[in-house]
Length: 523
Image (cartoon, rainbow, N blue to C red; front, side, top):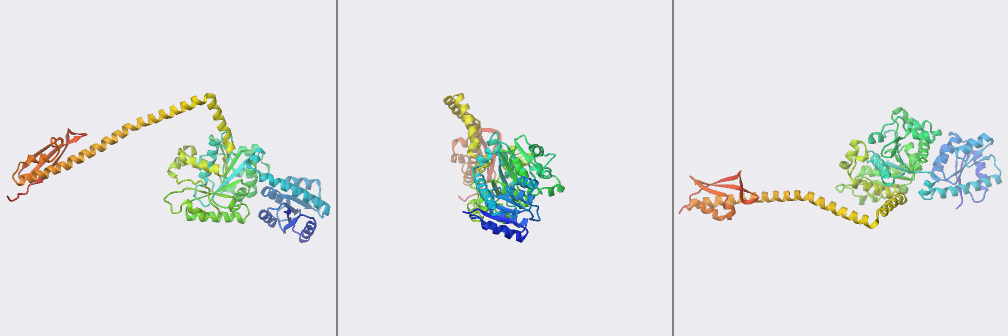
């Protein structure tokens, strides 16, 4: 496949000359010609060319800023600047901005052919490097960036971003992680985590062209949990200082200092969040299984596609707050959104997460099933890789062997069985008390029923002139011992001392009386 070229020049005559010259070079195809910096940027983002030929007179954006933005957003594209006059200053500034070379305009066919061939070779090597596994990028000192965005407000975006960062610290000891609040207008990670800091992302944006390690570190809050946090602007006046260009530079500087960068992009598609989505290694779009949230998935993916920052098939949709009583179940979601969701679903667990919100720290969430779900999600999306946890596991195995393999296993087995025995002993009194309570209830109900039966029999005996005490013969002897029958006037009365646990064993004050009227029957 021939390397594709996009040309940018405001002057139509200059653009035509460059296009005609490129068409004479074998093996290269011109995909588009843009007459402004805005059109050139849009075309490059949409087509992702191998080579960009940009004339120094393009506008309205200055050519050096345009080159810097394109190099950041499309690192696999080789950018060549064509200038009427090449001075050492022009050459140095263009190369510092990210250009791969500077050509004299008009250029000779031989010079253009050599520059295009070198640029195409560089672009091919860069694309192979960018498409290599993430561990190679890490070896080069480049941390991974995961953006967590929401399909709409209130789906749990900030909570999930914070918990993913904390789970990474727990699961991968020795690795560094930075949590960035890029929801510059409504960011709330500071309140969620109880974090305050004198500097925030707007302070970095003001010096975005001169971001060194010390500058970045001064704006980041180091939490005792091990998660570093970069807060959103604290005042409305500072929001405007953070733009898409500043966001790219800030995230790029942070990823050089941390193994993992988790970006909370909020629920609104803005130039700032779109810039982070574009340069991210993975993007998680959080949604809930309801109609409004799923419609938000369509809206967000469509917006990202229109600005050319992310395709639906490269976005990971995460189902949060899944419940068995919801109208929409996870099995139905793939038919309702453009891309299938992750296999790992997070349950509706507000009660379990409430301590973390109230105490403003994820460490207060003690429910292991929730953390197991977060860990499974992190593994599925590649945030926690197998090689990340291999070293800690190997160290644990070596410690076990040092203590003695079989002996340790036997001790562990004995410990587990002893723990089970202690748990059973602790539960046994409760079980016995419950059984005794049920037995007492049953015994009382039986005594009351038999008392009523004896009263009916005694009334019938009195009606025909028989002895009322013969009614006691109708019940078992151990119940009859606790009953007394008496007749007074036109009624009979039965008094029962209710048994306690055992028939015949009674206590004062625990009794029951019933009275039944006598109806005279003709003899």
